[in-house]
Amino acid sequence: MQLLSSCLLIVTFCCQVYVGSFLLFVQLLRMMSILRLCWLMERGMLMSSRELKLLAQRKESLKIRCLKER
Image (cartoon, rainbow, N blue to C red; front, side):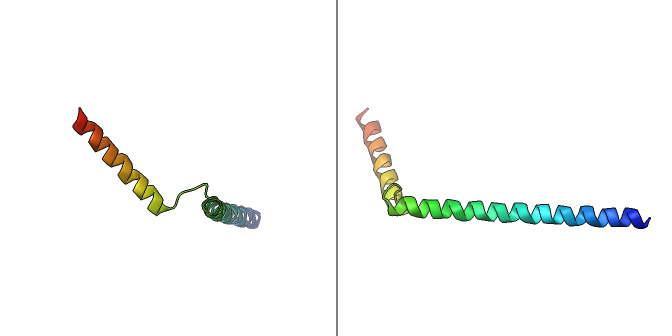
C-alpha cells in the first residue's frame, strides 16, 4: 500500500510538472508572437490597426461603387 501511494505521488508530481511546463510553453509562444508582430510593425511589414480599418473602409466603398455601376 505504501508503494502504491508513493507511485501515485510520483505520477501526480510528474503530471503537475508536465502541465506546468506546457502552460509555460504556451505563454512563451504567445509572448514570441506578440514580439514578432511588434517587430513586423516596426519594420513596416505589418499595418497598424488604424491602417487596416482604413483599408477595409476603402475596400467596402469600392465594393459599393461597383455594385451601383451594375
